[in-house]
Image 1 (cartoon, rainbow, N blue to C red):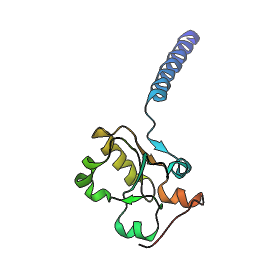
Image 2: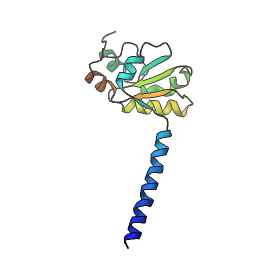
Image 3: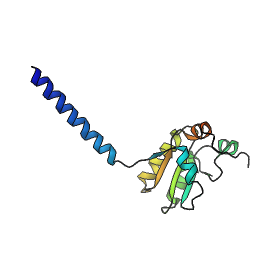
Image 4: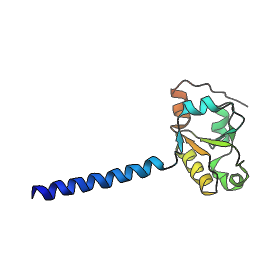
Length: 131
């Protein structure tokens, strides 16, 4: 009985370690606000804020452009394929959706900023507001 339990435990551990290996090779699709901040002025970077125009006007990352998620079908196929694209929203949910849609359309260098503008603000990173 003990050998059967130990064998089952070993088999389970091996199965779980196989899952971990697969996750290690999966493409990273989420980045921190600090990473976006550090790369924001790179000419090969595009920051797309998918919030509403009103949210965008209230406060935003200076280098960001506003392309609301609700009209993504109108603009997603026009994104540059030669840039790294960071998607941003308030909390990271809408930008995660935008990132997945862009990736499904063949855009390889797309990332969701974890925690959105809430996390950006929490880290004390610079914002601009108004027009």
